[in-house]
Amino acid sequence: MSPYWGIQKTCLTKGGNMTSKDLSIFNSLRPFSIGFDDMFDQFENMLGNGALTMQSNYPPYNIRKTGRDNYAIEVALAGFNKKDVEVEFEDNLLTVRTKNVDKSENKNADGEIIHKGISQRQFARSFTIADDVKVNGAELKDGLLTISCERVVPEHKKKKLIEIK
Image (tube, rainbow, N blue to C red; front, side):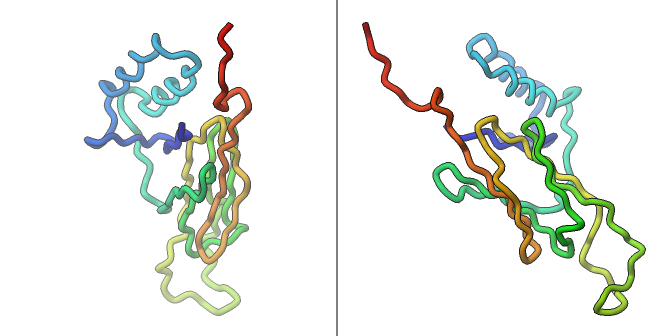
């Protein structure tokens, strides 16, 4: 079973945005499932009052599967460095956001900036991470922030043969 990767406040279906009708499909599964209440609650929270709040498309990102149980979230952060960005993980929510960016700074060590075409606007991008996925670390290199994640399957979830008595 692959881990649940969802974008906080963004949820798309084959036909476009998820509607409250689509959500009722998930709610109708509650009587037939055990232990999935948190997941159904997350869908309800994503829909809010029946309408999705869409995030902007900034900054662009990729989610890659880098191994059987390994994943990488890549966020394009051209113009940012380590001191401008923070990555926070709490309650299954991974958030990448800017720290305070000083827009008044028109000079750097290389000289005065005449035209600023590389955006350094404020942003916050959140990802919902499954319970069995561990965030291992983050690296910012060549304008690309890579957050490595690993799915750790606990013993009680691994396949086992049940003896019949």
